[in-house]
Structure formats: C-alpha cells, structure tokens
Image (tube, rainbow, N blue to C red; front, top):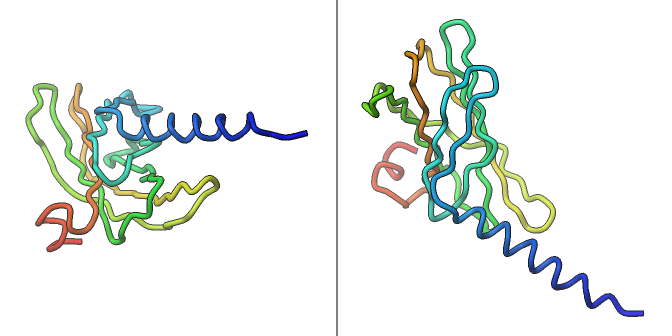
Length: 142
C-alpha cells in the first residue's frame, strides 16, 4: 500500500503557510487592553502572535518572527505607537532572540519590548520586522 496522497497534502499546507506569510498588513488586538495592532509586511519574515498588554504605566509588546527560510540575526522589530489620527507618538525597536528551527522547516525567533508610557484612547501599535541589511538603519543600530 502506497501513501501518495500525503505528499499533496503537505505541499498544500506549506503553500498555505507561505501565502499566509506573504499576505498584506494584518490586524490583531491586545488581549486585555483592546489596543489595535497593525503588522506591516516584510520581505524576509512574518510577524506572528503579537501580544500587547498595558500594566500600570507600561505597555508590554511581544511576539514571534517566523519564516520558512533562515533569516539573519541580529534583526529587529520596528515598533511605532500611533494616536487615533495616525500621528506617531513614539518609535522604538525590539531585538529578536531565541532563534529556533521548528518542525516542517519553520524558523522562529521571539521579540519583546517594554514601553514606559500610558496609551491615549484609540492608540494603536504598528510592527514590522527588519533583517540586517534590509535597510540602512538596521545596519547601524542592530
């Protein structure tokens, strides 16, 4: 008995993962705060599972960078805090760490940053992954 049907299933699953990673900007929301999160597309990796929590006078931002191909370290995640009208209140970066290779060839790393501020009502967070050499600022500051 042969298992020829499993190969197209794996190919389809990998294709779906690839298309999901190449999709346009996604939006999520903070679990407890209702803070909007916009994920900007990147040519190298996709941001997954962004989490934003506000505790006391701090905003905690974390998530994962994923790719089917290896990505170079030390990359970073650009973080922009925008007000209700889209004006930039703060820009910063989060370093990536804990690079690992998962099942199916997926490469993954984590990011985390703690912002010491109170978000105004209607504020949202914009996230984008930058690999080393992808932009001039990444080469200087990472």
